[in-house]
Each structure stands twice: as structure tokens, then as C-alpha cells.
Image 1 (tube, rainbow, N blue to C red):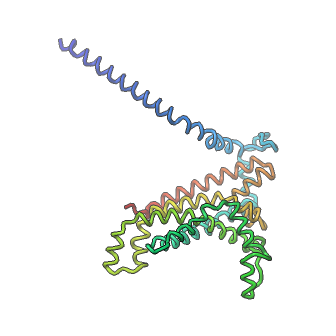
Image 2 (tube, helix red, strand yellow):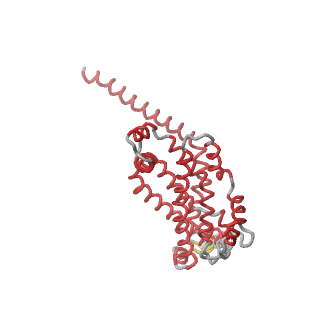
Image 3 (tube, rainbow, N blue to C red):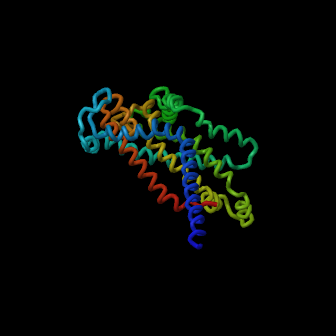
Length: 312
């Protein structure tokens, strides 16, 4: 009697589990169907090029990019023993060191000013963020005129004050700093807008309480603004580091990697190896190294930087 009554219960339980499995399978297939367009695009434009790049880095290729000889790690050994690539690596890290802090400090200064409730401040916000609407090519042409050795604005100022003219883009001592200055100007618009949005999300009651206690501007900046803005600053620093390592347009327009490879950043070096020298294997190896560098820098940023982030 007990056995007969237990059998329908066991049958219902098995049937219920089977239905649950079928339901899960339907939900999974439905989700996969919705993700299929994105997966297809990612596969074509991200996953395949990434795998292809790693594959090519182990081969020598002809001018058409077709693999000819398997060389293993030789491409990596060659570029790390190449003084040109090591110079490129050094210049890239110096460029990041110049542009990232410079962009963030200037953008933070402008955002703090633009966050004040002053009549007509909207006009200045528009001016400060206007570099977002300027393409890299147009901005580079603008800076080419500023850096021009004879008719450039900067050299005219130097001559006016009795100084000698400087080859801003032709002198190895000034070229990287000059390109870094133009890059800071190009990146200010985006960074300024993000930081301004972060400032406007800070609770005004914190400043009101600080004012009641008689706190000064710099005390509020140090104790309220920076801690409350830390999630935004963390995002901006991470994105700025990645973008700086991937800089190409202004290098191509302003210096072509010169003089004496002082501004030959890694991305421009990859471009030159692949599309000027037709050494696709070496270029792919450099691309893999760049990917690893950016990955390591991002991981370090998340490990160390996120500890200092204060979420409201």
C-alpha cells in the first residue's frame, strides 16, 4: 500500500525535474538567440582579429600578410633586443606619465570652477568641453600651426620676450613634451565632462555642514570633494591610461614618430612595422605586448586604485 502510494509521488517528482530542465534549456536558448547578433559582431571584429594577431606573431609573413615560416618566439626576442622598440616602449611610458596626470589635474581644476553657481557659467562649461567636438586630425593641424618654427604662435611669444626659437616638433628634447601638450588639450573635453558630472552628484548637504563648521575651500576639496569624487576619478584614470597607450592620430599628423624615434609610440611603431615595412609578424608581436601591458596596467589600477575609492 505504501509502495503503491509512493510511486505516483516519485513519478511526479521526476516529471517535475524533467520539466524544469526543459524550461532552463528554453530560457538558455532564448537568451543565446538574443545574444547571437552581439556574439557574431564580437567574433568578427574582436575575437578573430585577436586570435589572428597572436597566430601571426609566431610567423614570418610576405607582403600580403600570408604566413611563410614558423619562427616561434623569435619575433618577440627580436623586438626586445631592438633598440628602436625599446626606445618606443620608453617613449610610450613617458607619454602616459605626461598626459594622464596633466589631463586629470587640468580637467579637475576646470570642473571645480565650472561647478560654481555663477551667472553665465554655462558658456564656460561649453568652452571647456568643446575639444570633444574636434577631431584628432583637425586638432593636430591646429597644433601644427602653433608649433610651426617660423610663424608659430609659441615661437612668436618666445621672440617677443627675447628668447631663441624652439623646434617644438623637430627637437628631440621638446618633441615628446609638445605632442603630450597637444594630447592633454584634446582629452580635456571628455575628462572635464565626466568629472563635472561626478561633482554635481555630490550631496550639497555635505558642503553646507562644512560651511557651518567654518571649513575653507581647500579643506572641503581635500575632505569632501576628492573622496566623494573618487569613483569618477578612478574611472577617468583607468580610461585615460588605456587611451594614452593607444595614441596614434596626433603622432601620425605631428611628428611621424620622429625626431630620432622620440615620439615613436608603440601603436605608431606597430603601424610602421605592418603597413610601411610589411613585417606583419613583428607588428603582431608588438600588438600582443601592447595588449599585455594595458592588461597589466588595468589590473594594477583595479588592485591598488579601487582601495582608495569611496562609494557613497
